[in-house]
Image 1 (spheres, rainbow, N blue to C red):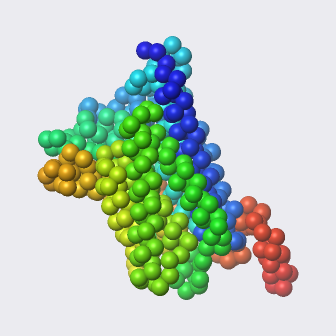
Image 2: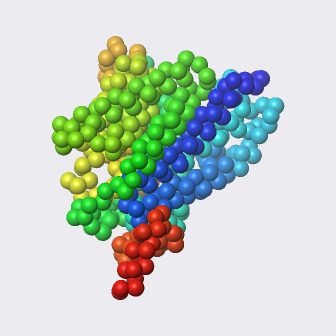
Image 3: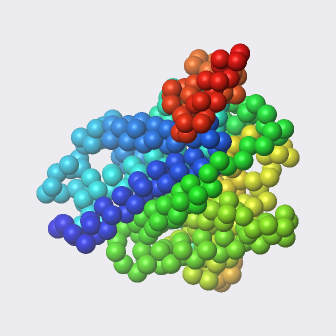
Length: 428
């Protein structure tokens, strides 16, 4: 097989766009926390890049896309040693080792690594202000190894949740174009479990914990939207009409979700906010991720619009049920990820209910969403409790009050915060 330079160039570009999403997420999350926590919040994203960027090359790719361990179509993960360090097969051989039509495998390695990085980084939004950085770094490696890599194999590597698995009914096979289950349901469930294990921030529900920098939030959302074109359009694995459809659907769903969120805010609260607009962008992007290549642009409007409304309501659930999902990973990524996955049962062209299909596609999507939730929840529970018993999750209470940036990183984002901490220390 000969190298297709056009496809290769597009996939390298897509990988770079997806990698940009993690610094974009750092800005998005960093702006949403208080000024005394912004550096730590951003460091959690950069920490995920550091850890996952290394282990993906060592065993992440192999666990995802090497030969599955167990019966074909039923495997939960692939052999981590078969292509350890990218040494197996022809991954690094310029004369061979292609994916599809002329894409070098090593380019796909880079593309897939960026997905693993952003998934782990997403979870950090549930843990703002209060966790040890070292514990987070260890969690990043364990979660990627035990939850992300297996789910990526199950969905995209020919495992349990793929179209080679048991959950195929007639013409209805599992659809996850770019990561509704693997990325967003996975991260959203992990965020919920960790929020329950770690506990609430001091003052949660009693003190205002407003975003300290809304321009950061909007800039972060813009970078996420830009990078998401690599995420979704890149998942077409070609510079072609399928990529174009994914691009249009991605834009359309995000735009519709902004409308859905802002209208909900206006009717409920009396104001349409910039935080709501930025959050609506992300909710729409999350929802269209599993569906970007399998719905029409009109279908994408409904996917995004519903995602905006659902997530606008869902972000308030933490106050009703008392879990401190600091930056709404559950309300946006889990809820919109679930909706996006299930929406294919209605809007998938050919098999969806609104396009001549029956309930089979909806049933398949519900099953794979449920399996992904249970798997991610159990794995995160085990990791979270093990780390709580060994390393511990929480920083000291006085460090949380004074500010995690200064306590953990010996830095502050803003000089006034450092001066305030020094004055308080002198007075005490």
